[in-house]
Length: 222
Image (cartoon, rainbow, N blue to C red; front, side, top):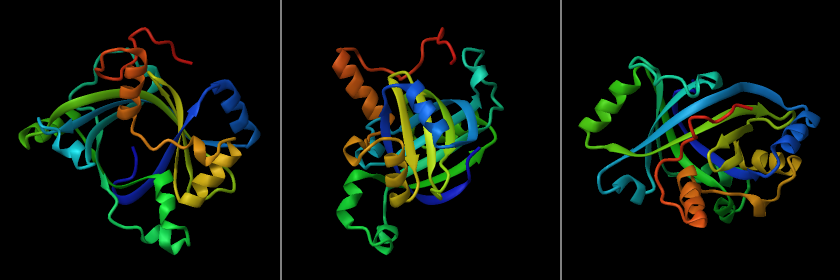
């Protein structure tokens, strides 16, 4: 379960074309696994007119379970969850204090984020329904989190998704840049879209109707 509280989130995504080569690189870099491979079920909520999305805001309920739980029966009502709010960043002070040019923000996804742990996912969903919000998009992924030695404050999150494998780098701007270079990437490789936007782009490329970003029930675990 992640920390509870509010902070400014700075992150990017990177496509992983060869997961075996990427894992080998992590090993050579002596990356340390700080959170084991976990199955995530995420549900986004919005108004019927999707007012939050239009304002660059997001409300999400996330359920985290061991990877081995995938494909088993639906979680019970008492399943713990994480309620997350994300919205436009209201401060550029961290970047200014670091002596980084303002335009560098174009290369990074920067959001205000607040999270709180909830003891009961279904009850939290009922509260959101009572406030006029409804589920609008659901997506799944398996996430494993690593730390790279010598890069303080950086989280390397390897995400296996129904549309491919990505790595998210979250932390200070300089740490993200250092971590990306060690992993063999450049700024031109940075992606700042959400998984929802990446999923819609993938559906357009495949000429498929968009729905929820879910794994087939028979997915094999690596």
